[in-house]
Image (tube, rainbow, N blue to C red; front, side, top):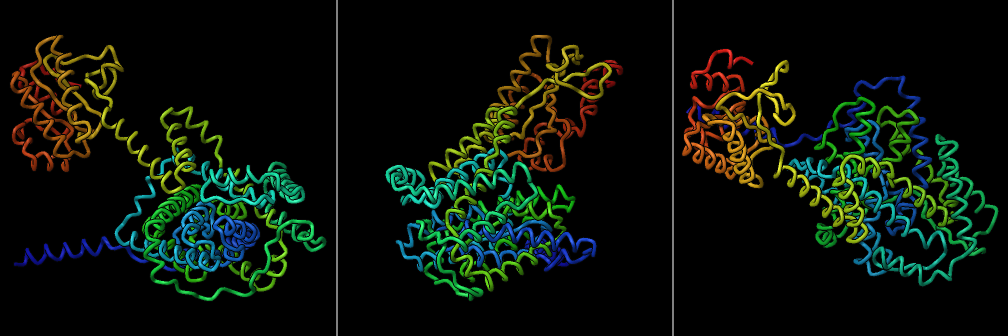
Length: 583
């Protein structure tokens, strides 16, 4: 009875241990150093200067009024600063989730701006709720599914979609269409309506931004562009010259507005896509900057909670889904950010803009916002990344191109799912047809080595030492059996084979199909009078062998923890000289 009680207690403790803890609030405060204060304040002001025009532009990408970007930034920055595990990550509106918001909400809003804004906020709430649920069931591992080739390809696709989405703002051409190709067709059809003044303004801003990045990369180009454009708008009546402006912006701070329950249900499926892309981008950026700064590991479960809470707050304050911003994170790091205090400083700056500068924003030209988006989009295209993939492996480049084509053809979410599926298929192909080797001793080199790598290797008479460089499972079980038999056949041409020893070092995981193939191999070799033995068998693998039954058929005396132990047993059984067993 006591034993049963202990077992139940252990089970209960194990279950409780699997429930993720809520991240400690303001964890970065512990151990904060006064020397960091100057860098955090400077970084916060710098990030805010870049953030204000950027999130206004991204709100336009999402199909919302520019002020929605500022509304979304406030709770995102604040909540992540409280619960986030990254010291430097800047969370808020960003290009990919903004695009996915537009793709999701556009067909549902039926042209009603009020309905559109309500659905965008509801989408953020659903994303937040799903993130919290994902954290509870420990789905943080999905952040590992976007490999580097997929990331490079999908960011390039996102960049193209962003640029096409700004053609109307930067040229004055009326553009419509529900997808990328519809927008391009609409632009081409109405290109005769292009406004020279709008094009000139947008082109001037782009030249200005890229020139600053080239000659003075530390200067906050978007901020200077906004300041200059605001000054121009104050001196000249841009609207009278045919240049569109942002228009009326409500002053003050947003009020909490809960979404309608019926809206939440219909947004679950698209919210899964937004969460997948947003969380993955969040984790990739957080890990990259934590690694550079030596801040330690980023907790995936904690990030799901922080991102979920940030999206909930954003949705309740009339925003739209948020994630991390790599550009703002990099800007803050370059300015000296050492903790999330820099995000709270940025919040104060954004509040000041909403309270005191909204009249100036109302006269701001939309062509400048469009140019800032195009500038950010061009920087997303990692040309060096494509070249690196091409140098490394052709299949990696093809995965990146598949992600790019998928995003452009099927939209962001489905394009990424296709790319992930192709990536897993490529991995499965390599695991299903792995490298294998016949092993032998090499004079002057410790251990056993592939005879293809060392033509002068010394084989042990009558012994086939074989290694299959993959876990044995359903996808490669029969391939393993055929190639193991081929190795025995190759060695049989050199002389009689008495023992076949399978080096199991790569078999960290097996399934029943793989063990069935191992049993078939054992039975066939036993029929030829060949002893089958296993070496380098870990305890977890041994447990699986015992549960399957193949361990008892092979025999406990033929399962060895090391290669030398297997060789010693063979030489003793074969009656070879002791010197043949050394090495």
